[in-house]
Image (cartoon, rainbow, N blue to C red; front, side, top):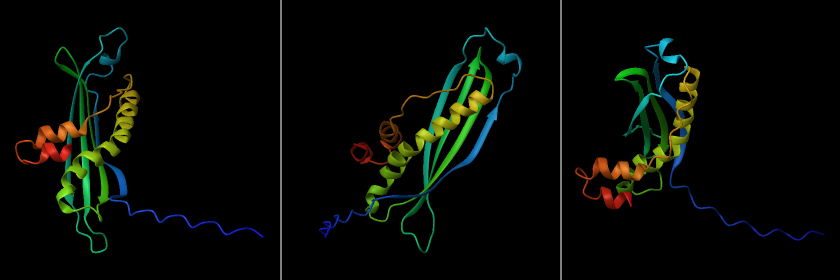
Length: 163
């Protein structure tokens, strides 16, 4: 006869639930092709801009539902002429049912972009490679520092909330 197994402890409710991740918008321009793709040219200077936005979504069944959009723009230039222009808007539908409302802002604009970034990074690398360039591999992004920089003036508790 086998002994009864001890009951597993009940796991606590997750503070956030990701419902969907998706490409909201994707754009790539290769204005100088095929000349800009010829071998032996200098690597383009890359400029990258990152933006995060969040908005509430009304839903009668899901409390505290939001859409977070991570926008990444990358421009490659040689001699001030654009070689490529890429823009990705990556959306995440997330709910924060167990999180007090005063903590929503930093979670939505730090943690959710941090979770989405590897997917955006992979899309950008694949996109640039498929356009004929070496894959654009971005290093890690400190979303906490971006949040503190962006909201330090407008939200007095932004630096401490980011910490």
